[in-house]
Length: 298
Ligand SMILES: Nc1nc2c(ncn2[C@@H]2O[C@H](COP(=O)(O)OP(=O)(O)OP(=O)(O)O)[C@@H](O)[C@H]2O)c(=O)[nH]1
Ligand SMILES: [Mg+2]
Image 1 (cartoon, protein in one colour):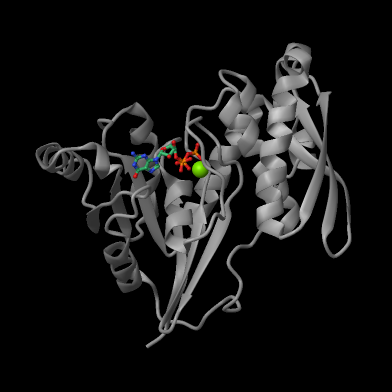
Image 2: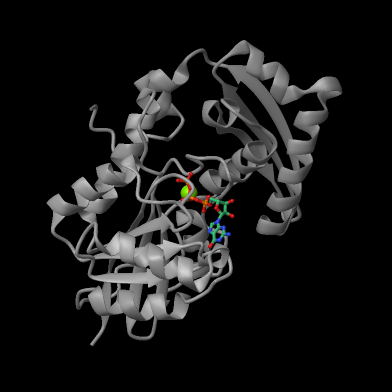
């Protein structure tokens, strides 16, 4: 019997959703970082096996929104939960159940779908601590399964796949076997640059940037890319460029390196920084930067 279906990977920011997606696919599909709300779009990772096609959907971390962008990020995650066959709620098991979790749990209760709780980051806990965490989480809800994993160390992921399969409906593959993700190259390129920025900046800057591809020219061995980095305050532009342009240079070089590796070509990247004041509260801008894919104007 062939099985196929959608598994929504949801949870609070920083729980390890994107790391898990990449570990399951054995390929970098989504960017990750230690900054909350790294992921902004729903990103499918498709794993096709002999008797099963898993469509994992990485989602933005569900959080208390401060801006319109935040509300749209939550909406993206909620939509994935509504559209999936199985919910994989991933939690950072070094953190106790908190207020942020109650919002997610309320949604889960309403959906009446198979829900697996993935206790992630077990590499940070002793066996005793893990046991206590499992007991504490079990009290919150009647989960179909509790599975301890380490997305980073790829611990217990074979077991996780085995369990997921049991909850997927019978059905044919929905995507061609060679298809690994539902996002195009432009998206992946911009995300690589955004990740390099997230890793080098702090506080408001990681949340305030957007990256847009302006130009792409290439031949067999070379690729010339021009990208726009949007910030939402003039002061952020200075920080991003840095003293003697050191910061932007470091972002550019690290991005070029990864882009060259990924696309098997020598990449030359130009970066321009532009201020779009308060863009995170403007729906038109959010859409323009590709962050509201659902576009139902709420
Ligand atoms: N020790 C440990 N760290 C992990 C594990 N999984 C993820 N991390 C780290 O946790 C941080 C957040 O990981 P992400 O995968 O970006 O988290 P996310 O849930 O996608 O976060 P958002 O996209 O912001 O919602 C990164 O620094 C990861 O390296 C794990 O199993 N063990
Ligand atoms: Mg993520």
